[in-house]
Image 1: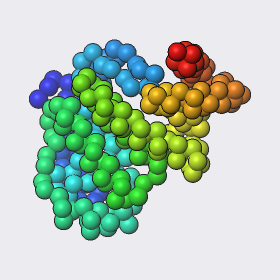
Image 2: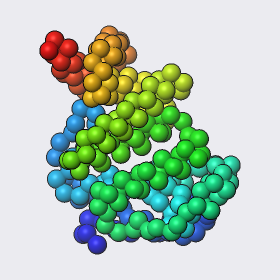
Image 3: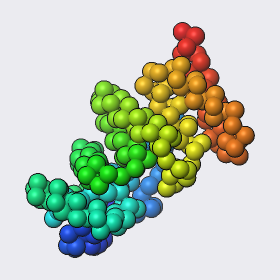
Image 4: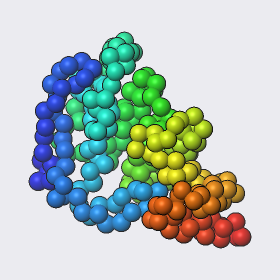
Length: 225
């Protein structure tokens, strides 16, 4: 196994079997750059590859910080609808991008069966888009999941109370603007960036505002062309 990886034994909250998950040592995570949609590129190992935990016994999948955060009712639904169809598959050890993509898509399946909020679906779709970006030759698939994420961020803005877990209203507004830009919806992007830049509350986050202003200029240049 890679020197920056290590294994940890945990209990699956759905089937209660012991499983081994692979984690990344913090010293192995050296940031190279950040994209305008918060995608982080790393010089060495990418911790995103290992953030999707999957139970090899029942197929339940979730992001590492949410794996144990599931209700008894949701467990029962997964036992009924997911476990009978699951064919055992281990995701332990070093992962390729394709392994990570498969693991995150399994999170989507678990999320859809559980009926989680749009904000959780947006987060997972965004990470799948990033993984396709890392592949470097999957622009259509990346755009497909950018558009899925945009759909769910828009639903989050319309239906959820903020903060939605760790997502605040200004960051959600930014993501809607940025993903519209990436999807080629320039007029819609301008509308959302204008809303954000005109917000007194958003000015309390100078880093977000600076990025928003930079992206706003890029969108306006696209519209002029």
